[in-house]
Image 1 (cartoon, rainbow over the protein chains, first blue to last red):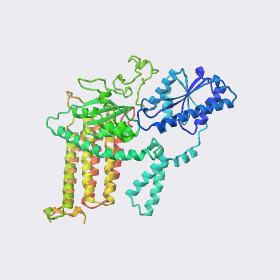
Image 2: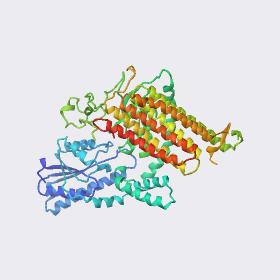
Image 3: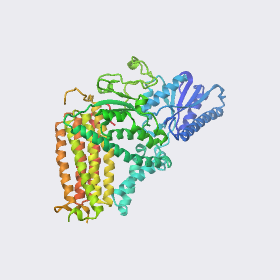
Image 4: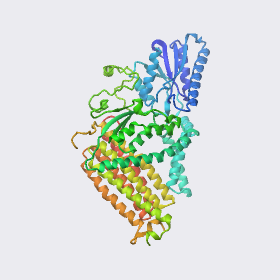
Length: 397
Length: 113
Length: 101
């Protein structure tokens, strides 16, 4: 490994096939005297007040301990006294749900700053929250921080090996089962021809799409529970839709058309992926509110009438979504209004300007808001891509 | 054969079918009025995704009730599920496309478009 | 005998009522067509066509029930999925920069 600025590195880890080799690579660099401090960090994809995350936290801590042990073992093996080399582990980002590569990069940068670290070493298979496309965007985001980034030169398992390991996985089984069931419902389950073609089709679907269609491995304990809670949610959502449809229908059919369309922003407390999609779609399905854009945890919601806006800020759908995905205890939380997580973006009592993305050629506006704890002064917005919490365009994918 | 001479279960079923059909037509009518009357694409997306989804939901429920217990009703349920998942997603995509194009949402006091 | 063939009043069957309902949907679809033609923005048109597609799905399902042709439902499912794909694809590719979804 080329000499590392100030010899201190941070390695974000996750349970991958190449983690062991990455640790060995970093340890070898340390044995050569290129690296004086190794920090292994685990970026949590949960929030610390979610119920039943103890298992995941324990797994993460075990993994961190393993990585540190491996590094010490490798150093001993290379006959280097480990005294001179600092090996630290940390579980970070338990206070928020992480959404995109930008947030991962920000968190890493903050951590590196606090510990005087100048280099990130990435495991080439590092894909937190199972998102296969995260590594490259994350390197891109990290490039806008002063950290230097390098990928550990590790042999990846060949495509074939990975395919085999996927086929046995619960994701593959779920996607295969789901598509086969769908095929057989459309066809005739008792007709052998349909069975054979169904299995073939489901195999093709599962091989090509099982990696992108689910972002977590479904578990036997949690996934059926979510399904059941989802089934409880559906009737109440339907009732909500019906109720507000009647209200909106009256508004639309009244001759004076008493609408007051306003764009609003609401910061929601649900995880990335399926939970936030469910919430955004529920909001859209409920008449009078329409999710226009989801930017990390911020949902930009267009509201048609004040009545719908009040209902949105009461956060009933957010509580339901938390109930479906995290259980009953997680559903008890203050409303977005009480948390001060909502803002009106238009009209006489607008709290914030409209967040048009600068890349769209729209007016250049400051898109930042108070809710970031690491808020920097507005003037730093263009000048300093280094300031945490600032970015040119949060929506580039 | 008049409605009164049927057994009560069938009568209830027929009445429910007619009611669902009426609801479907009503909400689709609301959707149409909204799509024509409302001032901008965001407001139109509201009725397009919501009133119309409910209208389609009622219509498909009437169909399922007419078909009764058979394989085809399962297909109606799947169709219902698809519409409830895809309609808001499509509306979101359309609204987001409008937003990315820099369309400022219409507010009180703007000119009608 | 399916319930669609059941006469309810004046010799008209439930199937007939469903057909009338389908005709009503067609009339409403004509109203939506106004928005698809007039626009003014591309997104307005996509939205209107999406609503028209949903209407078409319901019309297909109603016809399937009224005429006792369950295969119409398969066509309706395919139509619903294509309709969704249309809205996503047009939204995605009409935006110049940035991306939708």
